[in-house]
Structure formats: structure tokens, C-alpha cells
Length: 275
Image 1: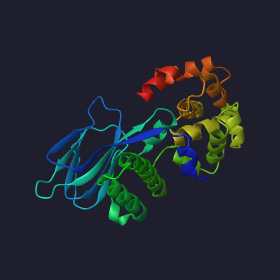
Image 2: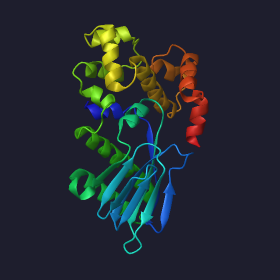
Image 3: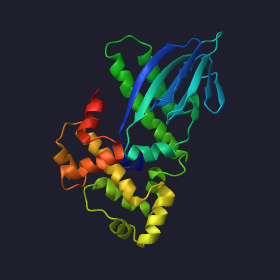
Image 4: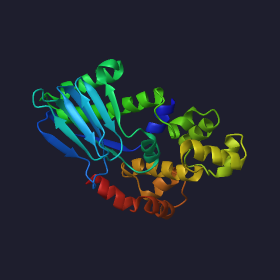
């Protein structure tokens, strides 16, 4: 399995298209109570974005703006050439997703027409978003998921991630460990066994892992296990079975770690997710 697929299969994220059409006036997004990133796809017209740091971007051709973390910003429509766009909320759930999100640039702006694969998916999304065919909402949200994966592929391919699991997957020694952890998260992993897998001393491995990934090996493992547990909980598997599948002997052990990390028990989190 390739690097990105190994990571994405355990990521937990949800996209939701909240606007598609012609924008008028000024739209304020990403307030202090928001926990969502945003993806804006401009099909035509002129759009200006101003973020909370005062950075201003004006787009006059089909483009995408990707803001993976919650960022307060304004979308301003040009009165003479109103922008036609699709706006997507992105909710990266806690767990291993956070390591990736924190490593991404805060703002990515790309010309859709100059990126063939992204452009094809964007045009397909536009076609569905601006139509009134049966099943439109489902298709648009699924296409948004695909588009997000394509953006992450672009980021990896073009080296826009400085420190994260993606970089770790490209490291000749760390990649062996990360691959093994992702393939068998339920195994009895310790820093010692990880270091042995990397053919390194414990101290050297721990330092290299933290420097490259941005997390201690044990924290990375915990985040990964919780991310996988979230996916299994969504399938309505009992907590005890989920615990065994992600390396915990009892459901109570998983519940303890889960609540410490998420602030909620597995059952409380699942109820909140399904709302």
C-alpha cells in the first residue's frame, strides 16, 4: 500500500458542502467557536479572501483555497463579476488526523486550471453542485471527500509538509516502523520494540521520531489507536471488541485512554458524532 493510503485509511474526517452558488456581499466564516477547516472552490467570477492575520488573496480564475485548520476569514464577492463557488466544511476528528493537520500549511491556494487531476475532479464537483439531479447532495459530499484526498496527494507530492507522518513515511528507517504500526496497531508496541524494528538505539530512535513526526512514538501510537477505534465505533462494534482490535486488553482500558484524549468516553463520543 502506498504512503498516503496507509495514512488515510486510519484518518477520520468528514466533509460537508454548506454553500454552492453565486456569492453576494461578504461572508464571515470560522468564528472562535468553530472547529472546522474549510475548502473553497471558485468556478468563475472574482473572489477576495481576507484571513484573521490580514492576509488578502484575490482570485480571478478557477481556483481552490484550502484552510485545514479553523481560521477566521471573510469571503468578499466582486459586485461586477460575482463569484460562483462551492464551500466545504472539513472536520478532522481527533486522533492521528491531528498530526497531519497540524503539519499542513495554514492556507493553500491553487489554480485549478494548471493542475490537471485536481481540475478534473473540481469540474465534476461543480457540475454536480450546480445541478438539481437526484442524489445531488450525496454525490457532492462524496466528491468533496475525493477532492480532499487529491489535495493531500498534491501536498505530499510537492513537499509542502514539513513535519508529519507523511515525512516519516518517506524516511528509510522510520517508514518501516510506521508501516508496521499501521498494519498491526494491536501489537504490543513499546519504544524499545519500535527502535528494534528501525534497527536503531532507543534514544536515537525516540529523538529522530520526535524531530521528524512532531510527536513522541508513544503519543503517535495512542493517537493512531484512537483514530482506528473511532472508525470501528462508527460501525457499532462493542467497546470490548474495539479495544482488542487496537491493542487494549479490556474495554475499560480503552475507555480510560479515550476519555483522557477526547474528553469523552467512547459511547459519549459516538452519540455526539451521530448527532
